Image 1: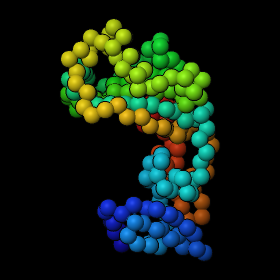
Image 2: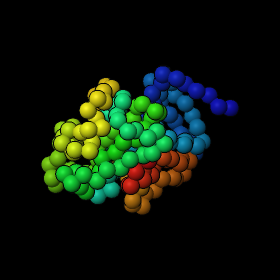
Image 3: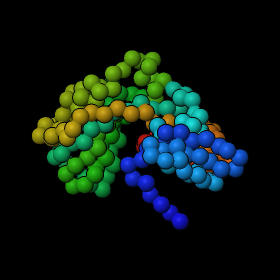
Image 4: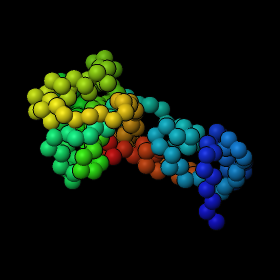
Length: 180
């Protein structure tokens, strides 16, 4: 039987024989199988996957949401290779006809080597790249620029074991080309 426990965060996961004990903020649950789908920084990835950050297989990125970017094509994901941002890329991913996810990212290794501050780099790419500056002239940013790390699916990882399976971002299965 499937049950949901909204508002409860998982604090710890331990193994007792063939049973998993899942400590939440409100109770202890038991399970024979855990399927971890809680993202790159989720509890299952940290406790069950025990992945170590490898800057050669990890991307650092920033993104913000914008309204009214000129010439937005709602059915087209755009990837721009901007000289100042190489070997990373700038993206415009439409959410609907007027809103889009706009960001910039590159391998963590290159961010560290070049000492790039990604938030200012995103703003600079938008304002100093002529074709983009024109498209963003009347656009409005919603919220603020947020940063995140993406464990890429470009190396061999153990994503399953006795009584658990990690999926998606929790399993470091992010596509290195698109971030999906």
